[in-house]
Length: 211
Image (cartoon, rainbow, N blue to C red):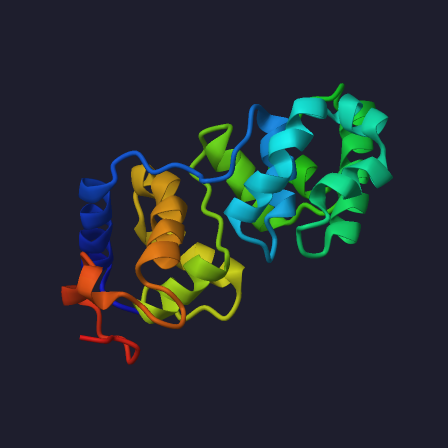
């Protein structure tokens, strides 16, 4: 794991270039954010946004989603991978929200993770993006870049999350997931990293480096 001072220097570069990074999923409220994140597993944000553009006009609350029904939901999200299982989970979590939380998304990690189809990563995104908490979601981009940039050699998302949380100040924790996801999506790609565009190439010693 590289020195904490270097990790902070890299984050300072990201902060200078993008001081207000945003989630690329489209949502209108806490519920549509939650649904969008559940749908985004193993699927691109663009693909989710295409599927939810019309869906969220009809079903932007748990009650409306339940009224829509599982089969109708599937017709909107059938372009998304694993849509059958995701539709089932969305209906289950919608019912839980309607019955246990008056249709509101709870501001509580344990409650979020108890919902169908919601794991730690999804809970972290909701806590960070909607509730403004210093929570750090570790997806495939973050996991890959943490290893490639030697931020962490953790073997699981939770190990990587703990390593990053231990060195990053709160203001960077709130932004780090977005920075790393966007960086991994558009520059430091898995197969063909665009190193000529990289703003932190001076810090990179990866075997994948193409400069």
